[in-house]
Image (cartoon, rainbow, N blue to C red; front, side, top):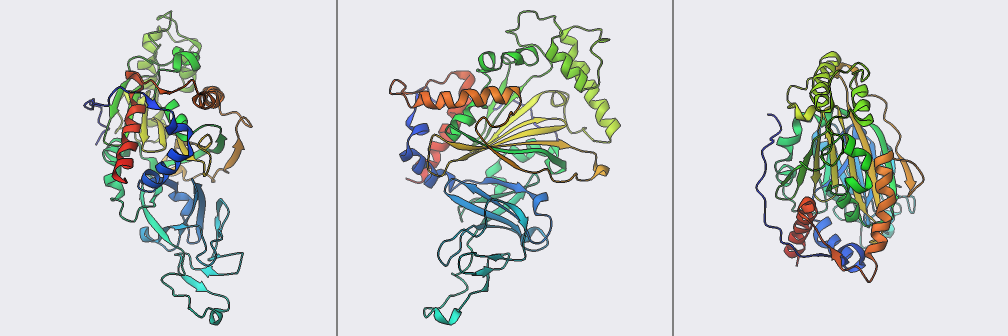
Length: 421
């Protein structure tokens, strides 16, 4: 089925300020962790990173560390395990990926099978109270797959993943994420709260100020916003000029670059700005046919626009017909003014081309690498926002209608906080 495009009903979200303590205090950070982060479904690694028995990926989120592993063949062989030895609490693996026959603790050589069960306990006879297999084992988390990823939840009683995702599989399956492959994989330590980062990508109100060059290639005014139970989206028209742009007839440099990327020669293009978008759509369809990629499930808007989804609480998808850019915001373990920003780019390849070699993951501190002009502009601004939030002069966020995805996210957080009270 094609991606639904109908406008969702608008919920009542209120109009009060969003208090700054939600972004700046350790008290709210701890409350949020206990009542929200440990109850939701969270994005884990790509299934392609867990292709063979023994493949594992170790990732951290907040104060926890999780090992994702292919323990056996078949869907049931994918496991998510707390990265902690039940003997003395040592972490078994450092963040990263690899392949192992088992997990052995480097502290005292307690060893566990790939599914977390006991394999070897040194000097077992000296444990007079015994080491029962059901308790001295790596603890397992809920894990399910969708879209080419393994997802996990700290909540043993979490609803099935598909129920949690709600309308999203219906919306996003036409993009065939499982057929997309990583072409960039970065983590950057950002000096802001995780929500400060999510907020920046949940509205286009800031485009005119922070990204003025984008006014030459997208419409930041006529943006459809849809708010669902937990998740939300906006549909941003590309290949057009912003209504804020002065000369509505000009084929701008940004539009010319879009045409070049689509295989259109801007020097011989006969039309004006309003003719660029239809030409881009036609070129994308032709490109798909030439490459043997079936885009028949995507509508014409999807062949040029940014279908921008926020999967609560911390995944942002900038989706285009040929691939996507994914953001995952992970909270810092102790400091509400810091976070980890995971940036991944994916490309959809022809089926016969096969999977390319796995691109290396790289980790940077704030400002150590360029992310491209647009994200560099955000990366420069976000620490300034976070420092300003900590001022005694600032009380909280004043949210306008264009920014209502932010208010929707906070309403969803509040639902978890109330449920856990």
